[in-house]
Length: 313
Image (cartoon, rainbow, N blue to C red; front, side):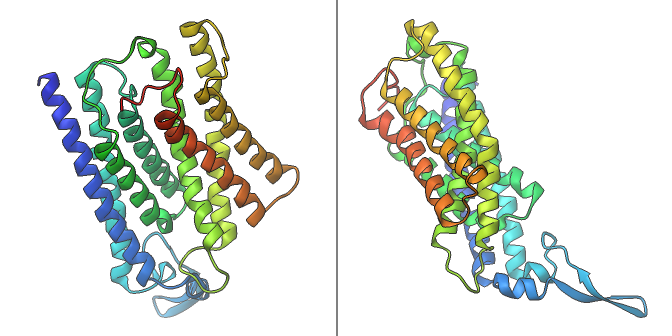
């Protein structure tokens, strides 16, 4: 297939990913809207189970499998499972878009804002799906899917750049190291940000969302994994800057806001571990860091001129 054909196939994969993420969001939303509240799930977490002629009382139930503790009508649980399957299909389409774009341009496909955002959406969905292996976080599915769909929609509608070569400063093996790690960290920070926003707006009392403590735990674990990656990305960026421009640090806006983002998440982790901050205060610190991340990803690249102005807009 020609480079033009691969580029067109990549664009089609992006459109397919948007549609699949949206359909997946509907499935997750139906489970969230029509399932039991978390209070009901806790009261039904153990149910009598008949074993032959005997009855075992207070037997545990498998939430992921859709047994009574998963709550609500059976069809709502199945809708959530369908949403999960569609999320995997969207993930595969998103991966296909990245792979075919890379083949079309014969380089790592992180050379402009369009490609970068497509990669970040993929990383965010990957973080959600990998977390789902460890614990049932389908309650986050609708919010992660709509975030990924909106991100890809923004990329197609506003940030789209035709497939082509990169500027000379980006023609380096460092793009595969520095940018890839930054994308992976950003995806996990987005998952944490979604959990943090839900934690902040969740009201006390019966809710179909998990407890604030559980939401905080999901966010904290994602940040604990993402923070070392972001640290490495900042260091790798400095090494690349030295190779490209002859200095490790030059107060470029992208460098400054990457460091501000690092400080924000470092402050969250420090407060969480040493000061014992929990609940609303810790969530606010986390979301301030998340806002810095979003400004670094979009505001700096689009609105502020600098050596990192490679948005392609």
